[in-house]
View 1: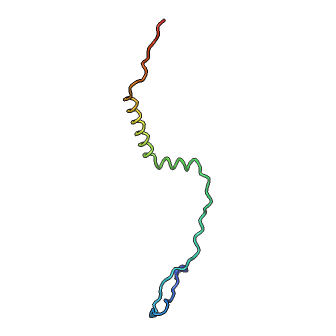
View 2: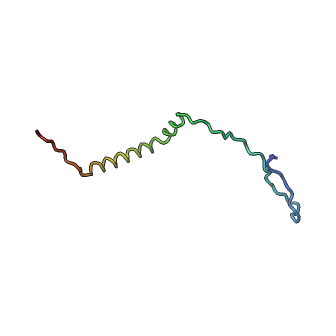
View 3: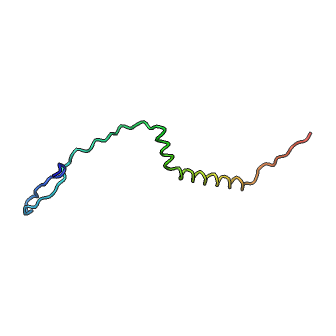
Amino acid sequence: MAEENKLVPRENGSNGAIDLMPVPGRLPVWELSPREPHLYDYLLILRKHQWLILSFLLAVVTLVAIATFRTQPVYVATAASN
């Protein structure tokens, strides 16, 4: 039987039935010290989300281009002749 489980008899009036009670054991030790992120880690993140990034970039460029071409010019260029 595993160490984390133990057979424990019930209290009075249980007709001898037993319960399986978990025994708190040691938690696994994880390496919690943060590792210095490298440039390759950032490149992996960009590669993972490349289609989302490209779609967002295309949408922003399209909206800005439409807004730019639809605006009325504020100034009119003139040339002064001597």
